Structure formats: C-alpha cells, structure tokens
Length: 474
Image: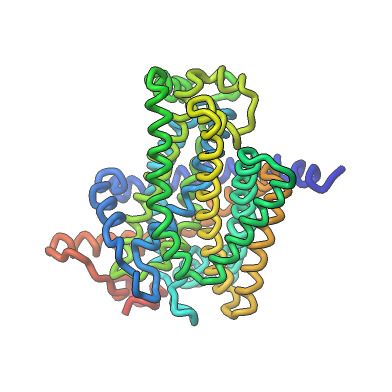
C-alpha cells in the first residue's frame, strides 16, 4: 500500500468525525455572536463596506500595514481555489443546494470573523521587524494567559495554512494551467513558476505582500466578476433555472447524486469555510497586522470580506456553472473533475479561450491566497520563535511545499487540509467565545464614540480592564 493511500485511509474517517464537532462550534457559536451583535454584518453592511473600500492610499509611504492593505490581504487569502474548484466541488458533491447553505454559513461566519478579527487587533504585538503581528496564538496567550495552548494554536496554523492550504492552492492552480496549456513537462514548468514567484514575494517581507495585494486583489476580483457576468449573460435563458436549482436542491432530502440533506448542508459548510475562512483564525492573523485607531474597524472590515467572498464571488462562479449546463444531471454527465468544471463551462460558452482565461484567474487567485497564508505562517512562527533563522526556514518550507504539492496533486492535500481546518475551527471558536467579552466591550466603545459624534473612534486599552492582557493600545 502506498503512503498516499495509507494517509487517505487515516484521514477520511478522521475528517468525518472532526467535522461533526466543528459544525457545533462554527455554527452554534457563530449564531450566538450574530445574535449578540444584533446582525451587525447584515444590518450595518453600508458602514462595513464603506470602511472596507475607503483609504485606498493608506499605507503607501508607511512601514506598517494599513487597514485597506490588511483588507486586501484578507480578500486575497479568501478569494482562491475555493471560489472556483471549491464551488464546483460543492455542486458536484452536494448539488446546487450546497450554494444556498454556503450563503447561510457565510452570513453566520461574518459575525465570527468580526469577533476574531477584533480580538486579534486588541491583543496584537509589534515585533522586531516593525510590523504588528497577531492571531489566535496572541489572543490566547494574552487574553487566556495560556502560553502552551497558544503555541499549539500557532503550530496548528502553520501546518494548516502554511503547508496544507498552500499545497492545495498550488496544486489546483498548476493543474488548471497544465490543463489549459498542454505541452511536455508542463506540470513541472508551472510548478517551478509558482514556487519562484512565491519566493520573490515572501522574501520581501509582510509589507511587500501588503503592497502587492493592495494593487492586485481589487483588479483581480473585478475582472473575475466581469468574466463571470459575460458567461452568465450569454446563457441568460438558464438564469431562472439556476436560481431555482439552488433553492430547490437546498431542501431536498436526497440529491441527484445520492447525498442526503444533512450531507448537503455539511458540504455547504465545508466548502463555505474553506472559501471564506470565517472562524478558522486565519483572517484574524491578517487583521492583526493592520495599523488602525480602533480594533473594531478591522472587525467590521473583515466581516464584510467574508460576505464578499461567498455571497458575491462564489455566487458568480456557481452561476457560471449552473447557467451553462442548465441542470444538475447535465453537470454530473460531464464526468469532469471539480477543478476543471468551470474551465469546461467557459469552453462551452466562450470557446477555446475560456479554459485559458480561467486557468490564469485560478493562478492569480491561488497565488494571492498562497502569499496570504505565508503571512499567517510568518506571524505565527514569530510568535513561537522570533528570530531570522526560524523565519527563513518557514519561507523555504512554503516554497518547497508550493512546488512539491503541485507535482503530487490536490486530492490528498485537500483531505488533510479539511481535517486540520475542522480542528482549527473548533479550537479557535472556543477561544473566541471565552474572550468574547473583550470584543463586545470594544464594540460598545466604538458605538458610544460614534454616538458622541466621533467620526473616527480611537481605542484605549483601559476600557477592557486592568487584567485584559492587551499591550499595544496605550
């Protein structure tokens, strides 16, 4: 038996059982946060969107990461393979109804994203590189006063995102490119290109990543939506059918592929969380790098990012597939893998140029996600050991993983990632719940200052109490 098959046999049942646990905490606590925040991500979406899209010139001449740059890194990390291959996989495995459940869990998850991002800002820390670093490890050590648990979380994030998610993004992007540009040894060539491009960016440090993301991510997202809109319009006669499929299959007890409703809901949760990463602690790492006047600002910005990722980008991807083929049965009849389904859809609609365009988008999406995951890994390894040798080792590790995973393929990496993702989500959400009083206090302070007419609220750690553990808000 091969190593790959052995790992598959181990992680398949483990993945199933851990996700049952993760479901309870990701959905249950997410709903609790959503209710306590009085549906903030939805009812205050005008404010969150304004905060997210303002300040596009912030940070141009600064050595620290601006709020807008952190938003772009967050979107760059979210908008990746999950928005293309992940959406296609959700439809194939769970039917069109899985998209509806992705929407539901994105709305719930946006509240979780607010909480973890706000906590990350509250408990952030400036390191020797002059940048702010934070995330679950930081708010667990400072807020819960547990260094051992914090180290465990830091290592889990490096494994889950620095190895697992990097591998998934690299493998899927290289597969799409090799499928579109077929020539001898194309897989190895594109794997080398991805690894080399990764090296160029990450050896420039967090600020270079922020600058790169701020310039590339907005254009990338808009162009993908434009391409999706073209395909959807060209298949306009199936738009009503597509919408009908999403809602019809969302509540069918058994899908055409034989999956029961519970499996469809779970599939929607898995692919939704893989796409928008709400509650996993990953975006909290990014939110904590921003230099802002109040923690709630990043909380609101990142909650909006969760909605953009799933309700907008993922929906466009789903509509491209559903309007092209017109029925779930026709999708299953194609027999293509999830990674190539959208390529086939664009080929049917646009001709030979379709798969090429999709492969380029997949590459860009995967690449921006990949460097976002490196940002998280660097932040967490600096938490464990803040020295140059350790950081250098992680950079080399990420580059090697990007190359090797592209050659090995994505299926096993996705299975391993799913398992660690579930474990990470469960543990992180428990920690966020235990620290939630600090996020709620910060939000109350934000609202009080706004009510008093303060346009840009300023935070001071004294409102949290003397034993909060926050250090950067003097």
